[in-house]
Length: 359
Image 1 (cartoon, helix red, strand yellow):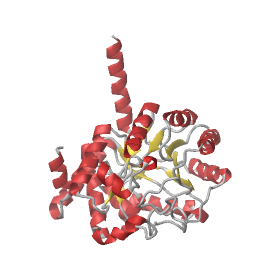
Image 2 (tube, helix red, strand yellow):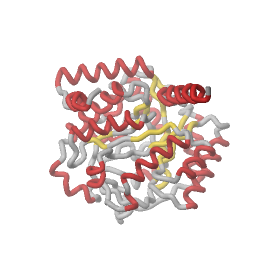
Image 3 (cartoon, rainbow, N blue to C red):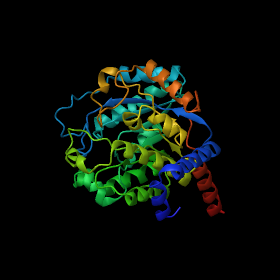
Image 4 (cartoon, rainbow, N blue to C red):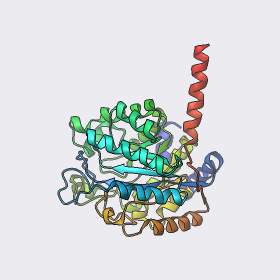
């Protein structure tokens, strides 16, 4: 798809939009099937070294009660995921890169693999790290990594992040390249409906995903948080319903653009529409993340306001999502990692090319 065509698709409304969403659903079922894969989400720490201007747990927000879940709490959540055949977990935290943090994550990975007889798949979302750290974590058991770019346009990136060495656009791109080099299934994503964001920016984001050849994507509507600097620009925002509709269009167009990648149904969708995640599953998404974070910590891991499922324990969250997925006309891939088909195809192609070059 050309840039202008993508822009036109993102703007669709009415019957034309319905046709777009239906086409994306057909492509999803044809390319990746009608299964939805669980990724049990464990937000194990909200301590962060970054000061991103949109984020509720940014370093500069003194109203947040900081926490580090204990190793036993994290491992108990992983055990729940394993025993309930979720097949995969996501370890997510604020961005830290100290030697102590790197070692802690490394130790947790080894323990998760041990308690699950190597059966649990592990995705990490722990920010920018060195290539050496990414390789270390990969060798200890992680095999997917989500590092959201938030905007692939440098100018817009610095409207939502401080412009300094600690929030470098170039370092973000370098980290994504390092993840691929380390062997991960690589995921990224953006926020949709940001202040100052245009349809052109979003079209460029989709083309960026295609260019760097991602394996999975997590993106959702931008939802403002009162304790962030970006909140002062709330008067220029689209309505939440418009952001929601545009986010579904983004999911649909991405499914057409990259038919065999994994696309997550973002929790932020449900913060706007009670059936938000089901609607994303119906138009192209095939991954959903039940929240397994201990309930006592969830209130303090609010990247945005009105985050859903703050008071549901793991059992309730699972039952709720089972019902939601059934309503969306899909089935759950229990006991399956649900790895990215795109990743495996890309690896197969790379092996063929290497063998050809060696001859």
